[in-house]
Image (cartoon, rainbow, N blue to C red; front, side, top):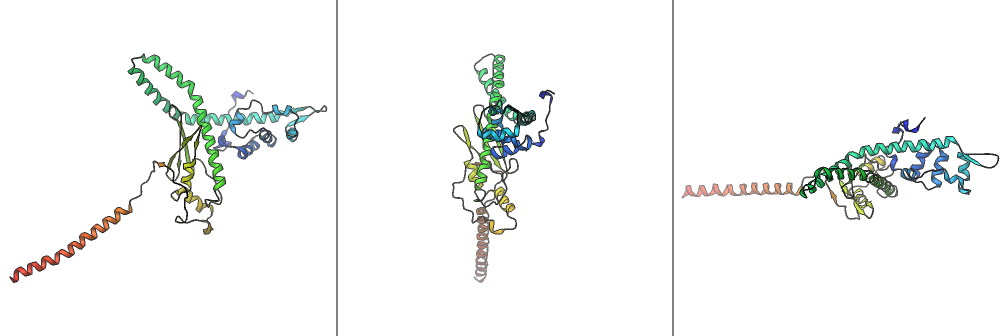
Amino acid sequence: MPSSTLVFDTSILPTDALSFYDDNFYQLVEKIAGLGEAKLLEVQGIRSVYSFFNIEDVFNILSFSCSAIKEIKKLICLEDDDKNYMVKPGCRSNIRYLYQLLYQKHEEHLKEITPKSKRNKQSQLHQSNSTTMNLSQDSSQNTSILSNHQQSTTTPNLMNILNHHGVLIHMLNEWFERNFRTIYILNGNLIENEDYKLLIAFNGTSEEACITCFCGVKVRLTRVRENFSLSNYYKHLKTKSCVMMKKKKITSSPNNDSNIIDDDELIDDETPPTISNINHIQPSASSITFDTVDNANKSSKRSTVSPNKGSSKKQRKQT
């Protein structure tokens, strides 16, 4: 049956499967394709989904005489009487199925983020058309040129966005694994679309990224060379104001109060990040204090003045 006619059920994959790296990726391969197939990818240093996509044939390495792949050959190959090896057809089929399943997941993800990219492209197209009208050029020719340019650049831009997305998720997961004990969380992890939302968009010339914590704080990620830096978001997670992290601390140790740090005891030794678009504003305590003092002054003035007025009237009557 031709593979082009097959439609796969990607619901068996985790929602963030495209961002899996290293152990998480190899565990996914073992679950879908098998143990031998997972070891075959690991020995070649294929660490992620998109690295897997860029390998033409993962079985080519089996043609080399190498001690590192002897055990793998026993798992996925048949050996004839002349000591020649042949890859088991089922193992080839498993790798092909894994590739097709992950690639369909990739295409579904592209469809989800394409509307955002199109809106940015349409805005860029509108600005370009306005410029060409001011220069009195033919509008129909310019529209055709811009349309062709849009089509030729859409795919690379989307691939860049996907690559940035995968790298940022991997960096955030690694940071949390290294630091969750030092921030007094005994277990758990950070889950995309549950603890935070990551948005990467193309602004016409380059990508922009921001991450919205589920406590309501939005942090814009700065660009460091070719990648984005999560340092501002790390600083936010370590501050006392992050409600999401407070909930994780309570959830991770419900029966052990000694592991829950009071807000006054949690000290952030780093400068808080530059944070924009906070969705809630707390009332100012100083304004309440001033109103109370002012009212008290007014009432005290009234109580002080009224006796004087009464005494002055009595004096007039006596005179």
